Image (cartoon, rainbow, N blue to C red; front, side, top):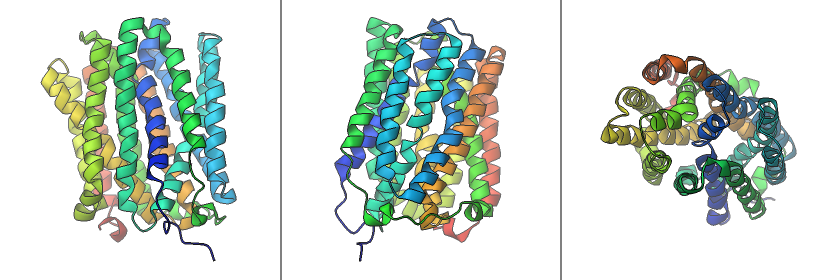
Length: 388
């Protein structure tokens, strides 16, 4: 008989290491994509459309690969294959910088890169077994990787110029590939083929409310991820300062992840999700209206701990509670597709479309989107499984 998932030792450093390098790519690339694209001469609308591409692929890729992972049980193979193909596709950035070519490069690398994280989430939760609250202690290393990359790469671009952006991206994707080779084989329960259809779980009222709230939250984040660096540079902040300001939010996120297991046990998933959405609304209002004040900007960045950190940790736990064992990979992928994928893509495109009206208006609308998400959550998260 196979040992139950989570009955053996937890490979803490291998699991944490993959999170470290995966989110280092986010830290090293995404704050600087807008500056790189603007340096190539693209307009805000083109930048918004290009940066929506990785989010659009998140709608399709994680669901396709997670279905395969749930059906085949070969999650580690999918992680390694996705990491390799993402690296190879990104190398195309060295071959040209026209708009059509960058559309192809972004589509190819993000299709495979977006495949790997949901599989790693399932493997991690499988090793944790009956201790899912320890997830945040492993996931926090992703935040540390983000900080290391966003600050380090920011100083490099300040010194050598944004033209080094493609080199930084290729090196960061190579580290993801190498770290995927260090991952251990999943526990027996995670490897088993016990696929279950998603449609029954996805029709639950609590799931629909969770997905709607997550979508609106990421619509709001779309403006931030695509244009905050351009906004801050226009206000006179240097590229290295922008990198440090990005890292402020992630430092706060790490502090939250350290205590997140206690927070979930004390307040319950529903309360944490609601508080995250309301604090996200406050964050966007501060950024839209008070970014010229360094201290208020730092305060707003610190709220990243809630607009992303607590919501994501509680969101992963929400999927674990509301989806059956055979639909965990699909559930994580559906969450990523609807919120980070569809929501982020809509937010990025809308921000680019209306950026000419001013940052204040764009971020005020983002704040209103989070208020709407909180109202949906208030009425929709009444399932008893989310109250503990």
